[in-house]
Image 1 (cartoon, rainbow, N blue to C red):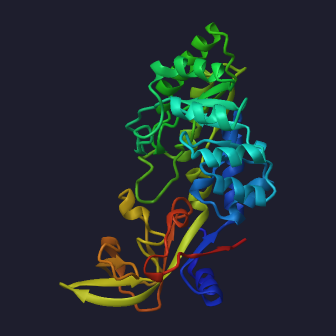
Image 2 (cartoon, rainbow, N blue to C red):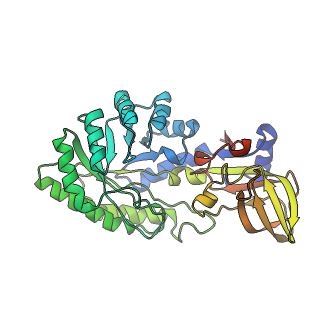
Image 3 (cartoon, rainbow, N blue to C red):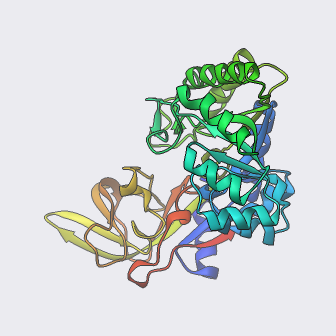
Length: 372
C-alpha cells in the first residue's frame, strides 16, 4: 500500500470518500524502472489504463510517449500540451471520423490488422506511417488479447503490400501477448513471427523499422494474479529475449499501462452499512462493482481489502452501495469486525479501476487525489 491508515483518515476527513489516492513518486519510479530495465524500448503509456489528466501530466514531464485508443484520449493529451507525434493510435479498428480528427491534429502513426482499416487510413490519413498487428496467442496471460485483434501472420505480407500500394508507409509490426502475463518466454513465438515478417518484407522491398511488443508486464498483486512471476524478474527475462530475437538496428516500442500505474494507487472506501445474513456479516462500502471495482466481475479479478481494525477475523461479505444485487466485490473474505464509518483500503487499484467506472444509481466513482 502507498498509504497508512492515519494518512487515509486524514484524506477522508478533507475530501470525503471514496478516494483513489495516487502516488506521483511511485508513478515516476515505475516509469524510470521500466526505462532502466528495458533500455531498448521506447515507452508508450497505454492511456486506457488510467486516463486521469494528473497521471498523464506526470508521464508527459517524464518524456513518455502515449498509446491511444480513441480521439477522446488524443484530445485529452493535446489539451495537456503533448505533441501529437508522441502518440501512436494503436486501436486496430477506428471510426473514420476519429481517423480524420487524429490526422488533422498531427498523429502520424496508426495500427491496423485488416483490409477495411487500410481503406479508411488510405482515404482519411494519406501517407501516414502504419504498423501491422499480428495475433499472438499466449496461455500465460490473465487477459487474452488476440481473440479480438491481430491478423494471422500468414496474411501479413499481403496486408503490408496492400498498405504500400494504397500510398501508406508500412513501418513495423506489433502484437500483444496479453495483460498481466506471468512468463516472459511468451514473447518468443510472437517475436519469431514478427522477425519472419521483417525478413519477408525486405524481400518485397518494404523496409520495416520497428517492432511494437505491446504490454503485458505484470504487477505484483498480493492475491497471486502475477502467476508467481515477480515484475523485476519478468523484465530481466524480457530484455534477454529482446536481445536474442530483435536485431540492434530495429527500434522496439512497448505499451505498458498496468505496470506503470497499477501499484501507484490505493482505493480508499468507507463502510456505510452493516447487516447479518444467514449468519454472515455483510458490509456495504461507498464504492462498488459499478464504480471502481468493476473488474471484479468483468474479469473475475480479486482485489485485496485491508482494515485498520484489529481482532479475530470473521468470514464477511463486501458489497457496494447500489441497489443491484450483482454489486458484490467479495463473497467470502476474512476481516476483523468492522463498524459503520470504518475505512477499507484496496491497494494496486490504479489500472482499469476508475478508467471503467460508471455513475450507476447516481453513485460517483472515487475522487482522485495525489498524495505526494
